[in-house]
Image (cartoon, rainbow, N blue to C red; front, side, top):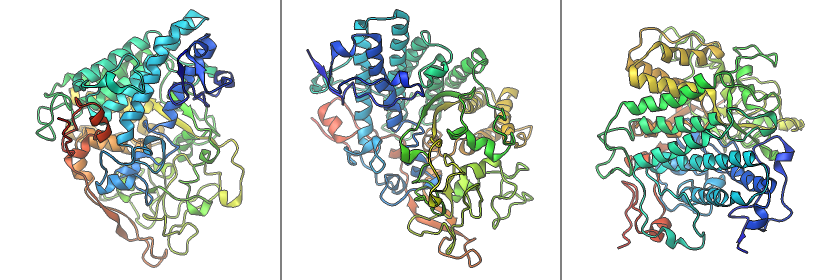
Length: 583
């Protein structure tokens, strides 16, 4: 009997669920097809591995690794991490293929294509063999739909990065690439539509919400959330245009024309969740933990397992379980025993408004550069450890002579706070139990932001657009948007709100690309405080940090690796990247 090795199918590791019964492991990592699909229970272990791949790979927010925020203008990467390559514009199609999306130091480029297709193959093998399993037919129907959902999710992430893709709805021998020889990529439009059709079909056989024992499994709402994210990407200026970024773009890379209705398709996907599933999903305005509803504490607790309760806001989540990730030691500031790997930029920090709704640089905002946390949007303190910030178990003093000063890692005078438990202080040896993190793959706030953006582009700043954004702001006590905005002004407000609300959740990297503003915001120096100076000796001075960023038009799309093009001569390199002749 043909064997499926752990690399390809069966390696069963802790999944996205809190239910131990859902995580039963097989007796061996080397299992035959017949054994793997003998029963519904054994087949579920195969499906669990497909879910586990979501958490281990570089799909959206993955708090096991340094986020994409360090590869754009929101953060400065630590030395030697792959964010450096993005900042300098030096990444290539062939950055170390043995590192890639599953490691902290590797490039997410050339291996992302290959690794994602490995996951697609696992899904296809599951779909082709589930019929063998003996057991509850209704459960098999649900599991089949889950695998279709996961395959579509993986494909959607390829489309976001590369444009048109090769669509495989059947498995191929991993050791025989000839099945792909001379198979070209689909057009961008066909790729988007195929994924959305798969999600629509999968949704029909999935429940609207998970039970407490099934947290992390797919739902119909998760299908429409993936669809909404892909639709808003496709409707954006990078793809939805008759004026491409580079002259050698073709229909593999973009639509080739502009169609306003593409924005409506994104809004429609959101509307399914907002209207047809409103009894299950919405903004979580509860105050069960004792924190003020509009405080920074109430906001940050949505990312920490110590307080976390699966609620209406969680559309698709996973749990972090690896011990060193419980409190994100690499991200924690030095005064609390962390490594301070993430340095938020002043470009991001100044996006947080004052409590009066004005940006710090606006007249009469009341902003004090020497007291940056005073009267700020509560999300500021919950997201960024700023100079002088005080949390439950530690403070943040990044100036020379301060407890968090460490010039090897401290670059901007700021540190990441999101995902960090403010009660944890490793320098004091406090226990780590109960402090696991939550990965929100999709939250309801993203759905509101997509809906607002899509409807503003489709019909202008209507009442519904205002409501979606104002609801998000009201949750943290921020004032409503000013009335009377035109479409351009509302677009600017929505882009601002996305950057603040979703900071360090790996959205900005993709947003600046789909909005086609990379050349504007990803070239030149970033800024921070002068960490070489003392608190009273010049620290509160705005200085340039790091080397200047370099962004070229080719960087809007990922390149395909040389290895992939050599194996399949029908593949063509994305525009702007060095061409490889296989003739």
